[in-house]
Image 1 (cartoon, helix red, strand yellow):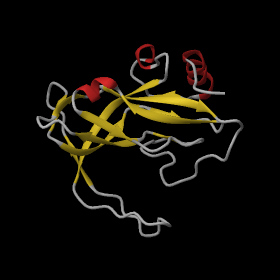
Image 2: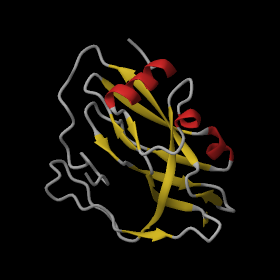
Image 3: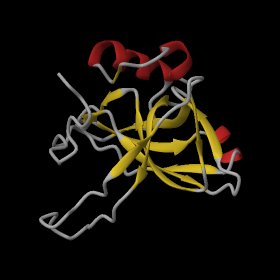
Length: 170
């Protein structure tokens, strides 16, 4: 039990569809996890609401930030919603934890995510926080986040929340 090795990740990609719609498996699967790449960036335009039961939950609205002709977007200091290119299918005997890639940290930005639950499948979104006073330039498809997978001691219930199959068209 522990974190997935590169060999196990590749085995799960090939046999269990752990990772789909990736750009380059040889680059994105590392010795410690899988690098997620940037599909789109959105700016928050409204306040959200979060309650205990989710009966009054309202997700903040956003507006897409376009990439220029060369594929770059400049993001001033602030907080953004980002979406990844890849579809991830977490097995029911594992979870994933996401960490900001160190290159992004060295540019003054970080990504926040929740736990990637057992049984979750989707093209996830996360919060990107740009702390750098000068902002940051990001290129479409940049590798920005690393997923690290961990075994659970046995299978568990599959994720059945609102975000199951998010941003996925089958």
